[in-house]
Image 1 (cartoon, rainbow, N blue to C red):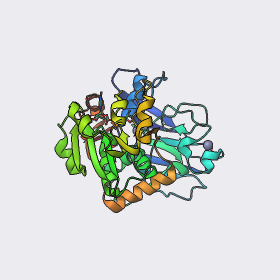
Image 2: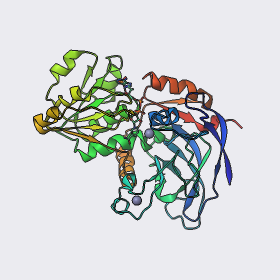
Image 3: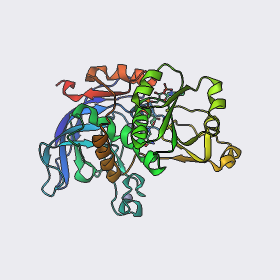
Image 4: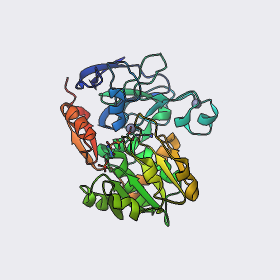
Length: 348
Ligand code: NAP
Ligand code: ZN
Ligand code: ZN
């Protein structure tokens, strides 16, 4: 067992505090990783706040992990000591169900094992990446290409893949008009990725406050959703809209922005059900879809795509003792555009 230092939640709304999580000794197919960087995803906050259901405390969250391999099990072939690797939202899945066999572990019919707040092999609750070490089956450990700076790699493992996957699945590319709702962690990656894929990209943000940033990230157009004229001007425009908003929005209003056969994909995960008027879907034969992270193979593809196109998240590096302040800024939509914790600052 390795006792990993951690930054841990002990209640839904209290501050995260220093803690310890026990990591199992690596089994034959396991990789022990010394974590260097951990991204802060809004899902970490939803989970701890109980937005998606009650959880047990203490819980250490974090599913955007970049670190160095420090030990490998006897049967590990994909990774070696010293490698730079990443771990995202999954640390295991059944590997035997139809979806796993088809290479879609994120849709494992027996439920994949979440990196935190999941049920581990021994029945314990998995603990995430705001910690100094983690032990993960090699299949769920991703090689980080040399072209990606280490401190910027972590957010690709959730924000990157969660936006790359729907953009690819719904064929964003030259000749398509893509809108991104919400310019936060996921949203800014969606803009960069859609732009690199060749799409015409529009940001739909609450205000014009981040307009210059959005255009610099690769957006062609930027509109404030607080302005009702936006919805009139952009009616029947987009082939694909990626909704990254962490809160409830009037999806019907956004559906009307879809052109013929257009699709809106929600990756944002507010707790409440979303009302949709069917007649809005009938017009233009519009679709409303969801998407959950991406598979391991797709994550590899995304990392290679980012390395090839020089795509990295815009990160603000923080010390472990700044995590509570960073969470508050995420909740206030005041993040530009992903906080990454320097795990070396998790003091003894
Ligand atoms: P984030 O950095 O907080 O970004 C969310 C953005 O949404 C904000 O920057 C803000 O952008 C906008 N927003 C926030 N509150 C709003 C409100 N009340 N009304 C309208 N817009 C609002 O969060 P994130 O880490 O990117 O995560 C976004 C969502 O995706 C979360 O719900 C998270 O749990 C979910 N998620 C889902 C998956 C999946 O697999 N489906 C994976 C990862 C995360 P503007 O200021 O530009 O308006
Ligand atoms: Zn996430
Ligand atoms: Zn499965």
